[in-house]
Image (cartoon, rainbow, N blue to C red):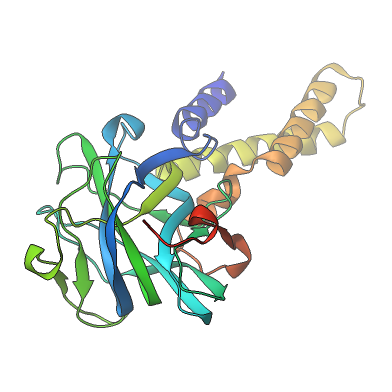
Length: 283
């Protein structure tokens, strides 16, 4: 009975999170106009995730982020950053590096750059669930020598983006890009974000997992001292085997370890995926 209760608690906590399948959380991909240089200080744009996709206000495991940029000719690095959002909808903390992509381009035409493979999380990020009614808000940003393409929709987004005063991760301020600085009022960039909500590993959850480990481990040890076919001994051995199988196949464990750490730089997860219109100029 106790085992059933513990398993139930773990499933309730983990079943809708780390074991969930990634989906599109935000898609702002309808190109609207020109481009803007990114620079070393970086540009940051809002990501609004419908609350229906994260009803428990969990953190978000990012599995793929796609941006549209005009890279410089030659080889360059494009860095993807994340930061929290304040309650007034402005960017909050000092940015955290999510991932980097090495780009090699023979021209400066629009190119889709993808961070992540859509399955393995590249970072666990926090969201603000109160700043915008009906949405979870965070910010993603880019640094590098490329230029970011403007876009609007189909996902809902805020009407401005921000530039930093200093290159991250150094402390700095965020300044909004004003309509007087660009040819239109709707200031937003090409971003497609995929991932899934993931529960933060509370002490209760980690304790539950520890208890299960202990109980199954103890059962396995007791079973090893009794005949395999014996009543209690056989059942204990079976339970021990079930736990060993669970521990070896539970992919959520790696995600929980990631969740208590910091987003990592992992160039092996990145790819310069494809180009817009076969690298034709934006019309």
